[in-house]
Length: 117
Image (cartoon, rainbow, N blue to C red; front, side):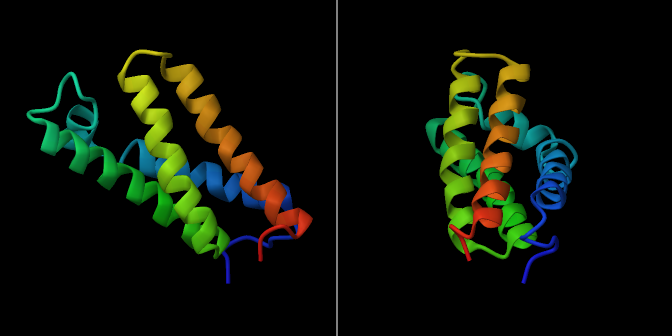
């Protein structure tokens, strides 16, 4: 079961975009925002835990919206990699958000095409 009709890719994308905005801003908090970046983390352990926790919040949101644990697992990995790139200053906030929303568009397309059940 998913929150949006998997045959309506626009509805799935919009639901994923809302979930992303919630997970990336109010649900992140100051602690995760600071600790998920290696340069500002208190230690390597805190950095790994914070980046993983933040990515898990996003993975859970994707799983809840789509009903797909596989897409949730993909989000866990992709979100962590994108945030790692931003944290290492490979790109900035706008590129970060475009990459995240591109993943959401891909998930919606995969559901609509029947690639994911």
